[in-house]
Image (cartoon, rainbow, N blue to C red; front, top):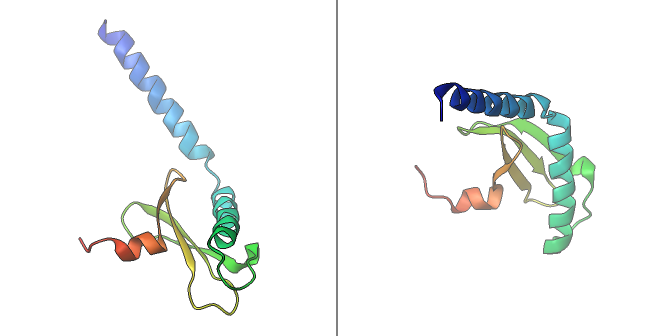
Length: 103
């Protein structure tokens, strides 16, 4: 393949990935994982009443973590923590983090 075609393909992929990242809305990501919390709460039959208002988002302090969505049912000591990467994907949950070995 000629070098020009290869460079064109690489540039097109770079533009596509950049557009995806620029279009990522923080509020939409938080809402998505707050809804995921409602599903997880019901699936795990956790005590307490789950609501979207149980969730807050804070900046991530781990490398590669953009946002941490922390949801805590009222009156319960444990929270559901969702660690989100910059691309909007779930890196791990709070329960997964507790099981990770220290680096």
